Length: 256
Ligand SMILES: Cc1cc2nc3c(=O)[nH]c(=O)nc-3n(C[C@H](O)[C@H](O)[C@H](O)COP(=O)(O)O)c2cc1C
Ligand code: SF4
Ligand code: SF4
Image (cartoon, rainbow, N blue to C red):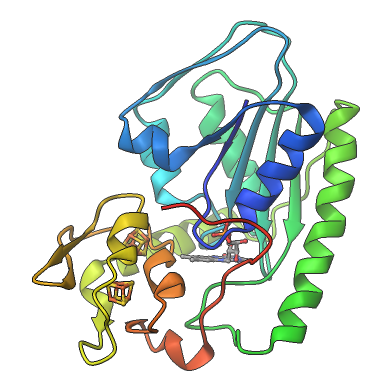
């Protein structure tokens, strides 16, 4: 079983590559959350893999919220458990945080990996250079190929050091929680074509289409930037990020 979360496609790509090699089922976290399915059973004979983007040096809030209610049962207590983080510039403390947070549910990862792709945090990173994005994707794809081989061999003991002090990571998490407020999104009503994609793909149903236009109906979200990056009209802005461009990883079909 491979549980993943993805807004712009990177983690879906990594999960799919792992699934192709291991023949295991892919489970989107978004669907678990939508279906309020908090009981997970990993069948005997299967690995348990988790594939997540790095958000503010740590785990996405959608995963932390999910874990606060989840029960994960490994039918085979010796199942190979692994975690893969994708990131764009620094993975911070996500690996040690993942080990700690899943540890609360009795899951101990045998190895924790990281693959560097494009950084989709548009308020800070320029995304209009298609060639540079492609080079970053190729780097991530090569790292993914290595990780897939390590998972197939069920290698144990891999991890990477924290890139931040505990204090720095706590400050990053507090900042993430401070800024993941939907009132910070701006809609250009002259650009919006009312297609509804932003609402359909939001993993937390934080957006509703009212009178043909998106309205953010929840105060907080996980700040995945899926609505921002995937809007076909470039009608949504977050913190001036539009000036740096939108990004999606085109090697996978993005679902709603
Ligand atoms: C809210 C937010 C915070 C992020 N924080 C970091 C970070 O701390 N370090 C980093 O290297 N990348 C960071 N990123 C970039 C993503 O981790 C990276 O682009 C990831 O591969 C996106 O996955 P996806 O395409 O599956 O959505 C951040 C992205 C978002 C949206
Ligand atoms: S995805 Fe963009 S164009 Fe479509 S409804 Fe949302 S804001 Fe409007
Ligand atoms: S409102 Fe936008 S950024 Fe927030 S969770 Fe939904 S899709 Fe992601």
